[in-house]
Length: 310
Ligand code: LIP
Image (cartoon, rainbow, N blue to C red; front, side, top):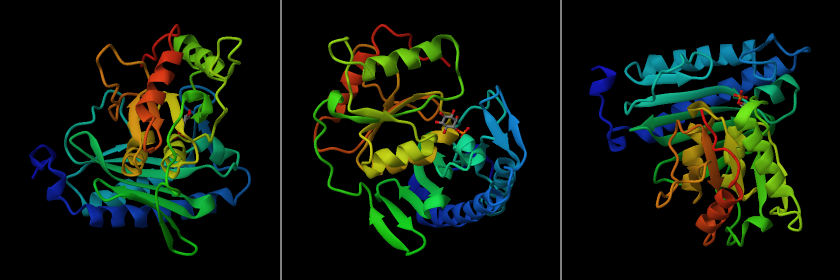
């Protein structure tokens, strides 16, 4: 049966079994990262589109391991991976495994402990299963559509539902702790949009800013989604992430009550929903109230900057 003939109804698949298979593969990848990190200096680091867009031999070796393991058990499923992606390849409605072998590669190169593997399954261009393994913390995050999200601490096998605490209402943007990233695009309109928005978010109210509580950069889109799902941060905003950076985190955030929205202000009357390949995201934590209001305030604060274009 060819990929195009495969059902696009998630109920036709054993998503629990798929999650278990992704979990086994993620643990293996985590061991490969820790093993590689124990050697000094970091294994062969190369620059991709510029000197801050890095890839290592370990990223490539892990992606080979992941794609071989998945193709063996799911030969008819599609595969979209960061290190084997061919520009212009569309994300179709067919069941597709979406893989970022090491998300937070710059952290990995510097042995800054925020790097992980991100493995997602999309059907109908929607994320339905997500597994993110953060080996430095032995924390494995996972979710299945409609079944909730959790973190398993592998050294104790303790499983905790997400968010970690009952979420408090979101009051306003000013009272938020935000996750943002510097990314690899450091010039041009998108760079101006980024730094002008950072400035507007952080600057004092007297100077026309929002003076948000603060902003943090974890260095990994997938771990930023995890931080939102846990409730560690109130929202995450970034222009630039690819489907492999967001697919697994997306379902983990949604199953923890959060929203994944457009990173650009939506047109009048538009809800501002994002797509897996939108390339810019505003992710808001679960809350009994205030999610949409904080998103609206955030989009307001981007007024006067360019829209992210990709
Ligand atoms: C990283 C993303 C991060 C972004 C970085 C980089 P990688 O992915 O997770 O959000 O700011 O520029 O793209 O390259 O570590 O897989």
